[in-house]
Length: 99
Image (cartoon, rainbow, N blue to C red):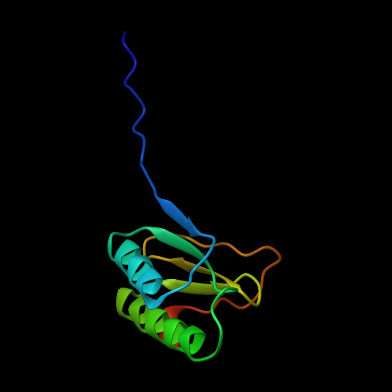
C-alpha cells in the first residue's frame, strides 16, 4: 500500500523590523488583508506618526477581527482571525473586539 502524502499548510508571518513611514503601515495592513501575521517594531516612529500608525492598524485589525498583542513597548504582533495566538505565561488576551 502506498501512503498518502501529508498535506502541508502554508502560513506566512511577516516581520517588519523597522517602520519609518505611514506607507510601512499600509504594507502591514495589506499583509493582514492577505491573512498574513505581522510582527512590527514601532521604535523608529515617534510622536504623531506613531499614534497615527497605531490608530490606523487598530482599525484595520478590528475590521479583520484579528488579534493584537503588545510584545513590548515597541513591538506588536497582529494576527489574522484564523490564527491561534497563545500567550505564555497566560495573560488576558486583547482581541480586536475589545479595542
